[in-house]
Image 1: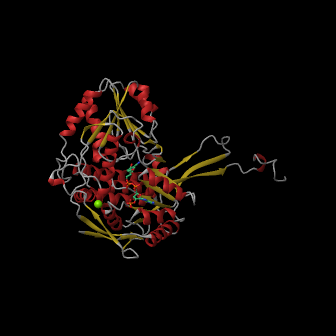
Image 2: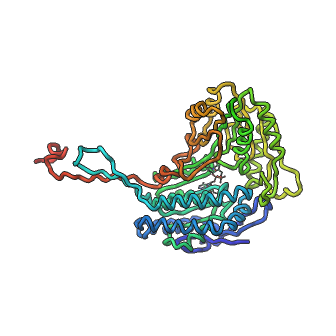
Image 3: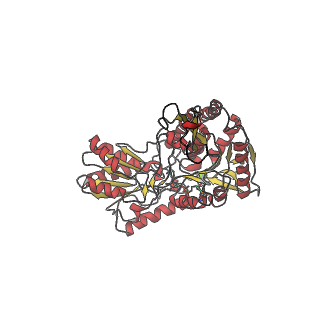
Length: 499
Ligand code: NAP
Ligand code: MG
């Protein structure tokens, strides 16, 4: 079993109170790592280190190309250690090996993008602010300072990179708290960072629990920016804690994304796309297409074809490349998902397929739930309104395009959405009416570090990725440079100051 210490101020150390916790494999139920458990005192130390590295350390003023080169070193190590990292992600998070391969290679690709972005300062001239020749106006983006990043368990290394990359590219220092359920690859990242030679305190990684390490981080007044990915419920708490000090927040929270199939869609493609949208990573994706809106004309055939394919899905060992559906992350998550399945039946929806815990002896130690489809769902039901974060699809029929749009938007969430149609213009006009941060037309789950991603409404605040995402880690500064220098030409010439 691997064992990990906290990574603070460039050093690997035990927790101040000596506590540790175990991370387990969601398939075997066995421990995979023993990990130091950060408490309030450790977090205090990590913030002190990040603060010193920002206020007095070389990082914020280091030439952009040097910062970029350090990030690039980590990219190279991730690529070199790809196979090992895939294995660790599978055993710590229950990700299927097919997904984990994609995750690790995308983690490296994203960090490479941020390394490139780090190489150039974000700076431009504001034109037309004064008469020509009177002044020069510079818009520059400076690092905010110390960033606290808190991440969930569904894409462990990728999420860590998605916080580290833009925060560091913008010149901040950072303290990262991985999920208590999946700390392993984040702690491997700490080792890579340590070997790459980042100045001490620039990156600190404090595995621990939300209730102690997480809250201590959020409440520390020396933190300038909180970047959180997780549930809307915890997002609300974080925003409320941050309000004490007006600490800036980016919140990437939950979703209940609507996937709208139009009657002119390519049905073969849309059936596969709808299954991919919901069952990828057992539905444990914030952008999962968990509400499927079907036109009455296609409804029955579409559901039959989906159900037939679901029955052919392989539920099993996530290490096996033939496995389509792996375990959920934890017993608690499985209970939550089963609770929603019961609630769907109680509220009158019909189970088209799935709905049970598999009885196969080989799966008895894993947290499995069958891929499940409900039909006859009303958008007011809990299974249509609340984020389940498991392999449960709610199928809702609709009659007109207007009705589909209105059902899709009738949600507290607004993260993703999708439209399947052969008519690009019609699909595009629906896409523009959906109140959410990303819409896919004849596609799903494509999230790129080059395009902003984030939520409308209670799916979050702010955006990750792209230039927009880097700016979330920066303060805009306007520098006005007078170019005239003649008192008589100042607009304040005859105002307050006596001649
Ligand atoms: P979660 O329970 O909200 O936890 C997320 C992180 O916050 C974990 O590191 C957690 O620590 C920590 N935390 C919990 N309570 C805290 C507190 N009081 N103060 C500070 N930190 C606290 O979410 P999850 O179950 O890990 O992940 C699933 C959720 O994440 C879903 O709702 C999903 O939609 C959302 N998500 C959103 C996106 C997006 O980009 N929009 C992406 C992925 C996931 P522990 O490890 O101790 O729980
Ligand atoms: Mg684990």
